[in-house]
Every structure is written in C-alpha cells, then in structure tokens.
Length: 99
Image (cartoon, rainbow, N blue to C red):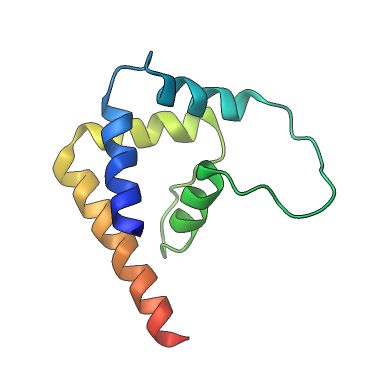
C-alpha cells in the first residue's frame, strides 16, 4: 500500500501542473496554519511527510511548496523516484518488524 501510494504520487508529479491533483497539492500549502481542536487532520501531504521523516539522513520533507517542487524534480527521473519509493518501503518494513 505504501509503495503504491508513492508510485501514484510520482505519476501525479510527472503530469501537467494544471491537472486537479497538482492544483490541490499546491493549494494545500498555500492555506494558513490554523489551529484546530480535536483530532489532527489526516491529509495526503501529512501522510507523505510522515513517510519521508522515517528516512534516516534524508533532508526530504513535504511541508511547503518548495518541498513539493523538489519532489517534483526528483519524480522526473523515474529511476531515482523508484529508488526513493523502494527505500521508503524498506524503512517502513524494517520499523514494523522492530515493533
């Protein structure tokens, strides 16, 4: 599931910036950080950032439009993107086996 999510995300990042999925990702980071009471919002960028934060020694994050643009540039190279998705999956599996 995790690797499929990242493969789909890479596919979306390689598409035209004018498609609705890319526009909504851009709009997500434009919003003001408003504090909500209750359970934290579960949004795709939050999940993807959590996946990235598991990577040791990686500066990759998904918190701003600049981070999104950096990931978009990585996604253009399919081999590099596949390596990233594989690494994310391996780290997630290793952390699950430790629990």
